[in-house]
Length: 219
Image (cartoon, rainbow, N blue to C red; front, top):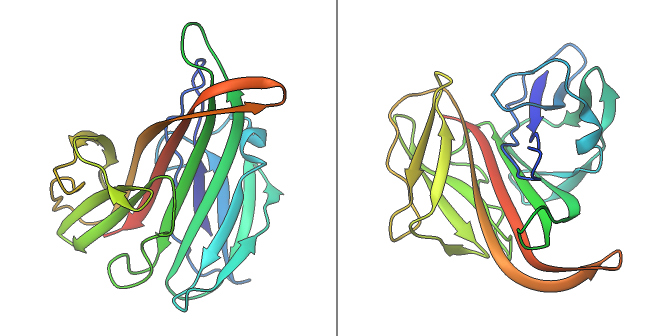
């Protein structure tokens, strides 16, 4: 089985991290577990219902996308994956949030994993995706590029989970790229991109969209 992690929310409605790990062949095919965690591993005792509304699709090397259905499984959910290099992306809309003196906003996060070769297969959602992290380079020299609506974002903070489990906060350069990382193994990363936007949800007015992007891939 593979593992798909989704973010835990703090008391103030802030997203922490949402990740998916690669698929490993099993006796009955390829699957991915969907669960809540702040690390690149399953945590117990966490309520999974927060991610029940996640919309996931799988994009193959030919560019075709297939919706993925979540099936309850243990502390989370499970989805079936096809063989080959795939990009799995998801959107979770957590709706209206307003705490204390913060602006009323809509909280959204956009998860992405690359199952298989992260450097030669599909790696970019593209289009008008509000925010995404894209791995570039090669194993032993990997950088992440931050895009918002397809354009690079400079001087932004990205939290990177390294293969040894440690975390490092880095800044993007003028072209939206982080520094290079040498370790090989599984990476996780997340960042945010907030944008002004006025609207109304369920009779409540908001002033901002708080978008978070997450990424998991192997290098």
